[in-house]
Image 1 (tube, each protein chain N blue to C red):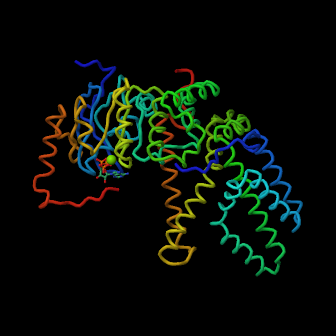
Image 2 (cartoon, helix red, strand yellow):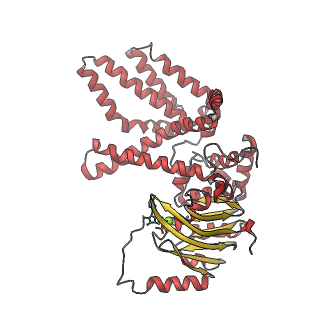
Length: 243
Length: 205
Ligand SMILES: Nc1ncnc2c1ncn2[C@@H]1O[C@H](COP(=O)(O)OP(=O)(O)OP(=O)(O)O)[C@@H](O)[C@H]1O
Ligand SMILES: [Mg+2]
């Protein structure tokens, strides 16, 4: 058996959204440090990862995240799972980066002065101390996304979930942020449509139509996914526009 | 989330949040007895002068009220129909002055400082089991998002104008409401993802 304190365990999990079942009876154990999630638009990737920090409840089955059961409530899950949204503008609440970071610390009970010192230190570690006092709406997309990631990391989650966080970033910024992620101790769950980015991951999870289609090492899953998705693409083009 | 904080280290940034809020409160009471044209005009000039002290970039921020101007126009017209032009001018001057003053505080104050400033006011609510932090966060969010909502409205106007050559229409109200609701959804999610308005259990690290 896997060490449950470092594992995500889905056991016959279903998740509903506005009354319809999106994820259906999904079971998988994820003990690996780096896990990628792939699948078509609308296959249920976001729905699945949103359950990990309690943004969506599990409607059937049981979910265990690093020793915390979904039954213990959304708040407990949110404490172990840090969630980085696709669009930084949907995540940043505060007018400046420094406040955004200290907010997380104050949420976990750090005092005002300490929170400021620690937030500044983290910005300094990443060489962006000068961004701390700038209004976040004046930052570039890449800078904003880095602030979002740091704002989550500063709360020291055990699991970091990123739902297509780099989709509006240029190549260079993507690579730079990915390198930062590689160095982290946290378990990482990365939802992405950029298959290349997942090739050095430990495992890849392929979701289709709310169900687990394949789970395994990237070499196998990515190849199978590509073959599957590209076969007959002209005949069955469904024309799903990306939002 | 876009928010229109202005970076800087001016006197207005340095003034404690509590002082600024008390000032806003006192002025909003003062305008009730001082119901004259001169007082209202002087008040508006004074508030605009506050922006001017922040420099050119500060003065630029006065434009935030542009999307409200047509509403001011309607308010003025209503007074004209009621036969009181002077009251109409006073009403418009006052509204502009107060919105600008609130916005001035919003762009020169850290949201955290605002929260800390208002939190003590809500401590008595604890008796009813309401968390003062929750309420202060709500108040700070309202103050914070006034300029953001104004900016959203302005961008809708722009989009509308690009296609119809008119800047305003009641047709903008529905999309505006939708944007505002979506925005509250996003803020709520972002908060929930990091432990909600009350934060995590404070005694357990
Ligand atoms: N708020 C919602 N209410 C109801 N159904 C929803 C909601 N959000 C998404 N869905 C539906 O759930 C299904 C899965 O959506 P989800 O966002 O999880 O897909 P995804 O795999 O993340 O897709 P993408 O790659 O486009 O991000 C879709 O059929 C979608 O229409
Ligand atoms: Mg998605």
